[in-house]
Amino acid sequence: MQQSYFGKKRSAAGVVFGVALLVLFAAEFASFAVGAYFVFDRPVSNVVAVTKSASDGSTLAVNATALANNASRIIWIDPNVTVNASNSPVVEIGTGFMIGNATTSKSGNLSATFHIDPSTITKIQSDGQKVHTVWVIGVEPKSASGAFHQLTNDSEQNYTSSARGSGIILFVTLITFELPINFNLGQLFIFLWTIYLILFAVALNGPFRNILSAIRSSTTRGMAALFDNSMLAILTVFPIVVWLTVLVSLVEQAGGVSTGSLPPADPLLEFVELTLAPLREELGFRVIPIGIVALLILFSSGKFRDGLMALWHPSRYLKKNDTPEAYRRHVKYVYAAIAVSAILFGLAHVLLGAGWGAGKILSAAVAGVGLGGLYYLYGFPAAVLLHWSIDYFLALFDLNPSLQSAGEWITFYTLAISVSGAVVLILLALRTFRNGKFGLSPGSWFGKG
Image (cartoon, rainbow, N blue to C red; front, side, top):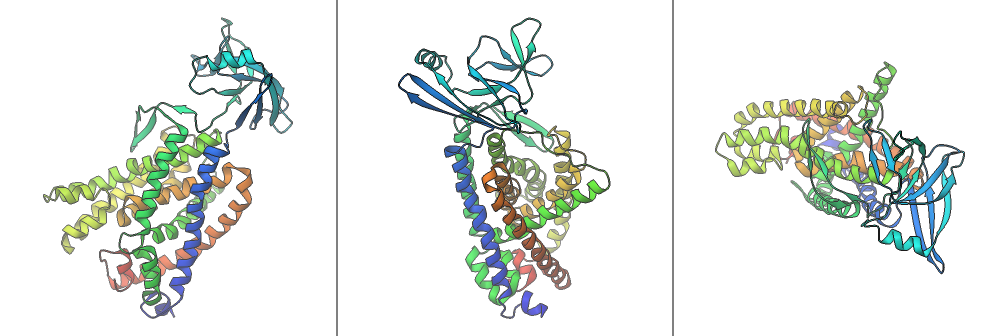
């Protein structure tokens, strides 16, 4: 029976598993449109402020969450918020416009509407701010100088697609630096969105077969054929990595080692950050350690063009230029680079001040092995899309309460895919090592490629 499912005899198993992966792909791809909706049409910020014109001025409707319970708060437009010598947030008295006061509910929510007279509207419009911001502020007693109010730690600003930024943090493994770029969140999201669409197109069409060709081929070659397509490989590995890291975290917590959690952040900022993270982290933790090793191997043989192309897809260009003997020798260096990359990736979550606990090192390193392996076998698009699936796709269902029920369905579906996918990979890997087939295409390892 194993031969009929995983080998060359005609079987529906490969098609059934392929279709199951396509359902997961449809959910992932749909999340792009949902993400754009939340960024541009329905902000998911902790503070959402809507202004409407009225005959005697304007009204400002403010809805806020994640605040202290039963607490007095000030609605303040365009305050000058900085940090003091103790790195605590403060607002400069006399800046911006205090619109009114409101009290949060027993669950920490706030919903209030304020009238703004025409003269104040005129002043706000001429205060020099390109994008006007609304803050829900709690203040501590005035500073000794009386020039500042220290803010409570739950004071929140509204973020929209128009909110501006002035720099992007990039990684070179554990080294970070800021790229000074002025942008607004909407522009950044559209730029990243375009890159992901390109990467999706690349993954759907290769690197060895397009997705439909791989599924058709699975009727004769079995499930091995599915691994000729990058997108199908991503969709198989993604749930396995997710649930394996969950299992590692549970074991660690049972042993008293906490993975910790990220500090609270505004959902809209977090949403854009999770869109950016897969690209910058795969550049910093996969391309640099692993791709550079492949590049240096090919450069040492005078293969300069293919060495540069190896940054995009290491295994393809190593196998293209190496003899079988040389490849077996060189691949050991790549495996070492994958291991080093995974360790650095795990350490970065703790050492770079993200807020994770020590237990996150191991679970992130486990994910790093999957990301590194997929990068080596299928190239940069595969690693980025796997990382994106773990970060953006799953977080989408947590960042908005209206999607939580859909998130529960997706969670159970990924669990089913992870179990079946793990069985498939184990059986195919056993066949690979028994037959000793290591061709150019990963799918060819498991059958006739």
